[in-house]
Length: 198
Image (cartoon, rainbow, N blue to C red; front, top):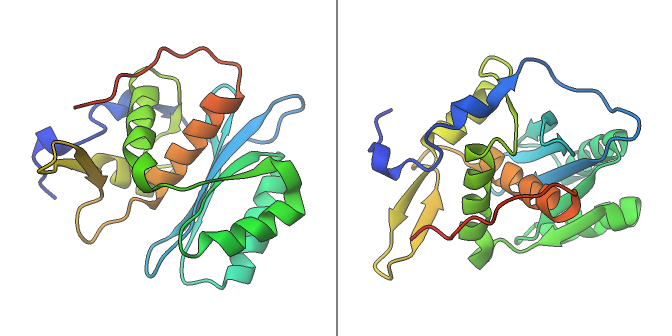
């Protein structure tokens, strides 16, 4: 796949990819998760980071019933005792409400909408400053595919629009963006503010 490098969002992300195995819950460690819910043929993706910014676990699936997704995702959240940020889209409200009933204040929500640019720019900053650590390519090749292909274009308004190229997915990217926000909002880790890219 050839893309103009000028349109690639996460250039240089590979230097963050140093993790060679998945983690296990550690006593005293806090965990933060992001949940991107599937629409149509997309994937539901849950990514989990520890308070140090290491991506320790994930869940990714599609074409599964909502009951199964809620059970599986809920089990992961319980296993890691993670604070999870859930996207509210046309299908997210029901999933969010059920997870909220099961896990209480561990579950919070976000409307992507106008927040998408800020979420992506924040994720880009976290990767460029080593705030996050990701798995090596052979551990999660789908993640590397999404990060390498994720792109932007300039709108007539002068604002940037972020997305995967046609025919590709960005569910992992968005899940990571939600988890990154949760980590920055909740964990006591200093971070230099990232100026909005224009």
